[in-house]
Length: 282
Image 1: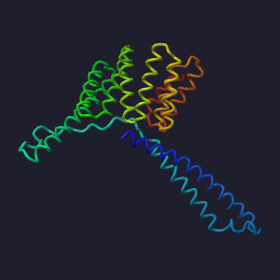
Image 2 (image 1 turned 45 degrees about the vertical axis):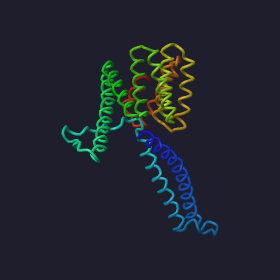
Image 3 (image 1 turned 90 degrees about the vertical axis):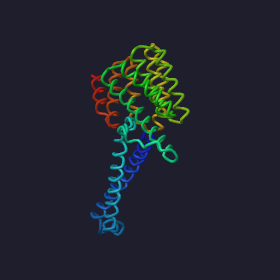
Image 4 (image 1 turned 90 degrees about the horizontal axis):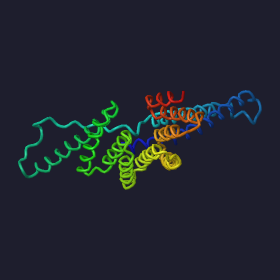
């Protein structure tokens, strides 16, 4: 889901560029039509006053409008939205173990139930974290990590590892947080998941910042920002701006970065985080 949304955002930015080009061409064409109407008696301008020129201008402007619609839908996507939790089948509805072909079906059903349980544990971790119940969130993250590991789902296991890093950082255990972030980064890098790797770098930057190593934190944020730019991740860029605002020693620069973060969160479709960044800018 995450990679598909990021691809959609890349297409959206291409649509923005294409729309701007079509808008410029359409506007120029429309100006030439207007000039042709004013000077239609002159032979060099007569063809601009015709119906074909006017239709061509309208087509270009319509194309620009279509491009902007595509861009708006792409940029409004939320690549970091948690995956939907699959519902476990009610008790008694699993196929009976009659042997033969029914056994693989039973194994598939059990795997689906296990995957659903893992996703439920991850969702419970997010809910507990949002409610400020840190211990409960950490237990759920560990349960999700173990479940994803048993399923062989390396991507979701890395997500759970990152969550454990966040919780360790929240309770002030920098060493445990760094261990989880480093492991999450290694897993994401092995999967070729650049966004996940960048997210882990932001986590490591938070660990460095908490320890007073501002230069190291800034270097890690620069590395993550370069990845977000290549991946056209608006939310990632917003996270970087927010993190840099927290590191800034100049109040004016911090306010500017908070405002930048708010604008990016709006574009990423995250109004709650945008409001938070605005509140920090004052």
